[in-house]
Amino acid sequence: MRERELLLLGILMAHSQHGYQINEFIEMNLSRVTDMKKPTAYATLDRLAAQGFVEVRTEQAGNRPVRKVYSITAPGTEYFRSLLKENLMSGDKMQFASDIGLMFLDHLSPDDAASLLEERLQALNQEIARHEKAPPHGFGLGVDLAMDHHLAHLKLDRDWLAQVIGDLREHGRE
Amino acid sequence: MRERELLLLGILMAHSQHGYQINEFIEMNLSRVTDMKKPTAYATLDRLAAQGFVEVRTEQAGNRPVRKVYSITAPGTEYFRSLLKENLMSGDKMQFASDIGLMFLDHLSPDDAASLLEERLQALNQEIARHEKAPPHGFGLGVDLAMDHHLAHLKLDRDWLAQVIGDLREHGRE
DNA sequence: CGTAAAATAGTCAATATTGAGTAATCATCT
DNA sequence: AGATGATTACTCAATATTGACTATTTTACG
Image (cartoon, rainbow over all chains, first blue to last red; front, side, top):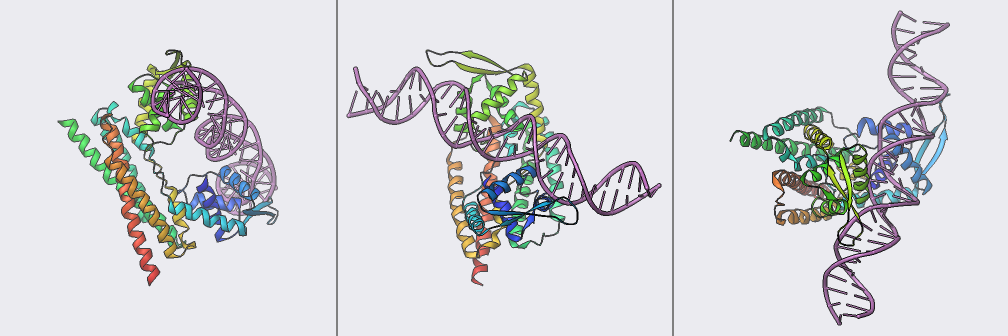
């Protein structure tokens, strides 16, 4: 929720944009770092507007439906910087949905477990490949850093998984 | 949401428990893998009960308030196994709240950014230390695996962060 | 024994989030 | 020119989640 505000304000720091544009940008470019959906973005922008951190004005291009253009205000910029510092200072909560499944691995035979994890490993490899062949975004250093960070974790997961699958297979044969 | 059901059913697979017990267990032992709060657990258990995957009966010990004891049913066990397989097969979404901050690193001077990240690195090191000196849970192989997985990611993050901080400091001096 | 703190066992109102729309315009093809 | 599908730009009702209680009982201790 805090991160949602940070994300939206950060996007508006680049330049004013209307809602559809913002959501388009997130869906196209930022799906790796957030899963925020459109209605959440609008709701969050409304909240930020109510607190004076963004301004909304409506505009109309041609005779398309009117749209809401959001701009960050001076207090909003201040708030953005405080959210940014807070985010950088304090660590991630680091929770992996897959750890919940791992905890209950004992309910499956080692071979069944290994097969399921192999499927996951393949998907992971594909994601890593997509990631690596994607050209650098070109939105500055920070974005590239975030992408590199993400990729590093994907690769760790790949190696960790491969190791575990090996162990399970061995355990299954013994 | 799916993971929440998996977690609760998995806990009930060990043995029937009442709500307070379940929540106590999660808070005490599982805070690394989930952030589910009590009301969510109760709501989820109610939903599972409505679908016939768990049974609720009330009991009273001494003259403490009556409590609800939840047990997993046969269809619940089936459902648990399907959730487990799904979870193991499909990868994590892998989103790091901190990536959002990283993306906007350019709004800070390299030295400011490095200082903030250093604070984070310290917190990370403490968490790793806590993690490493915690005794193995003793709830079976799966739980140990999940903890190891978590720890591996923490360590990666530590190393990655140290590297980035170094780069930022260098960049600041140049 | 009296009482302050901790443990037990939840509930509820408020907030956050999203799946599934709506409704208009524009592009493309036949 | 009319039909089809994509794009633009949101909105709403339904669901998920949680902070902040409530209310009792047991334990600790001076």
